[in-house]
Length: 347
Ligand SMILES: *[C@@H]1O[C@H](CO)[C@@H](O)[C@H](O)[C@H]1NC(C)=O
Ligand SMILES: *[C@@H]1O[C@H](CO)[C@@H](O)[C@H](O)[C@H]1NC(C)=O
Ligand SMILES: *[C@@H]1O[C@H](CO)[C@@H](O)[C@H](O)[C@H]1NC(C)=O
Image 1 (cartoon, protein in one colour):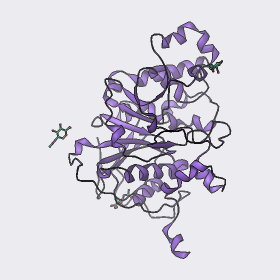
Image 2 (cartoon, protein in one colour; image 1 turned 45 degrees about the vertical axis):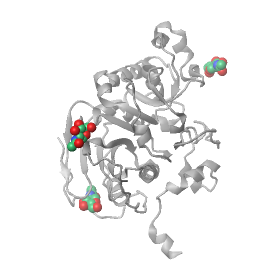
Image 3 (cartoon, rainbow, N blue to C red; image 1 turned 135 degrees about the vertical axis):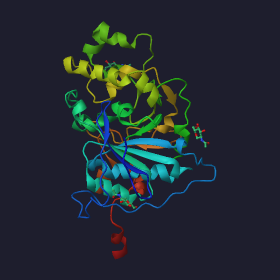
Image 4 (cartoon, rainbow, N blue to C red; image 1 turned 90 degrees about the vertical axis):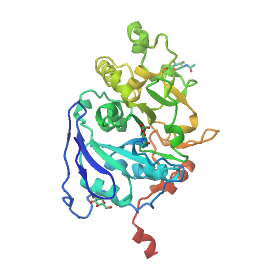
């Protein structure tokens, strides 16, 4: 059940618990009071991006992009949206699905004013669903419940969404996202770049590897690391295969025995590593935030790049603000909408 609001943008507010019960709460038109924003930064309005001639006008051929909406990462989320639209041949065919932990009218207004032409829907991710299942990782930011929302996409998104592209908030796309979106999944539930040269052993503890029953889960598979910050997911197949439960089962296991040290990544690897559709590495040049502890500067890997991802501790907006940016952070800066337009007039 969905309550559409009027306006030029297709805007729906769905309050969705991450269970099978979905209920909607419409926000009454005009109930969002114009008041000085409470801690939500100000952003410049993005231009309107128009479809090219080749684009489909069939509404059921939309490109669905899911991304989390966290007041702390809002600047990053805005940059993701801008970068996607800017490089897209069919920007008007994009539909964004924002997942947030708690309803925040200031954040909603901020999106609306920054991207007045955006097709988007907003969903509440019930963080209670994971709160008891998260075990502490090596970096506190990885333990935020919203980080786990990607596991519940199939439960949260409405049935008309058959495929979704999940994106983290600390990346920018520098190519037409349609090329990634159209990937032939070849029967797999998920597509992402795969890294078979990475040392897979390190993602799990000795306790895991020494336990024949636990590590036996990888038997008959050739598991490789993949990053969960950029994933194309067949939502129908995910539902049918009960993948949410499978991932949750491993999180429950982690509560009993410490089988890994990172946050939401290892349970994904446990269920899907070695069983995904691999796409070109250009779609996730990750690790630009440095490691999880210090976040030191890192260079780009050689080869073509379609997506830059500041995974790791360092975030480009923080490093740019601190006036100690890394070289790669200057690649993020052109997508930064932070700041008020009045500022430039006054200069
Ligand atoms: C969003 O903006 C449109 C106009 O661009 C307006 O009609 C609508 O009421 C706004 N909605 C919210 C929730 O601010
Ligand atoms: C729109 O696209 C859907 C899915 O590809 C297709 O089933 C439908 O026939 C199309 N509708 C029109 C009017 O072309
Ligand atoms: C892979 O990582 C494990 C655990 O960190 C380590 O013991 C092992 O030596 C590494 N293997 C290689 C080939 O680097």
